[in-house]
Image (cartoon, rainbow, N blue to C red):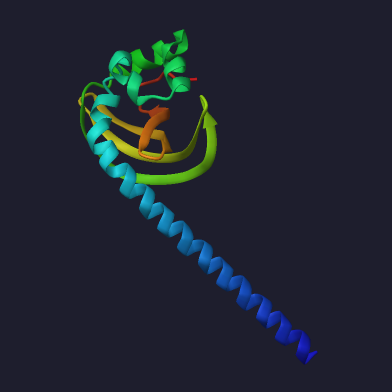
Length: 155
């Protein structure tokens, strides 16, 4: 019985240590990815939310560009444009990562973020997925939630 309790104690200690390592690893990755995204959003978000596809083309993955160019995508773009100009954003939150995702012949890490954007016509919650490969960062998905925008996000 005493040996069983000792073994169980060792297993529980190992499980706690493993859990602690996972929490620390996730914290480090979260911090690293927010440090990557913060300057990107500060420099690019105002352009992204102009919803001008000609200006956005180099910032988007081919898949997102194709979605936004479709009829449904154009309805989304027109509805999103009604939010007006971006005034500021806050509460950048890291949602998670999917690694080694192939997109149009290139392998990317997909980084999910959420932020509260303040527009001239009201606020909107933006969920944005960035595709990162080396130094290249492209927008792979964008979702907009706002009472000012009753149209569902891009397909």
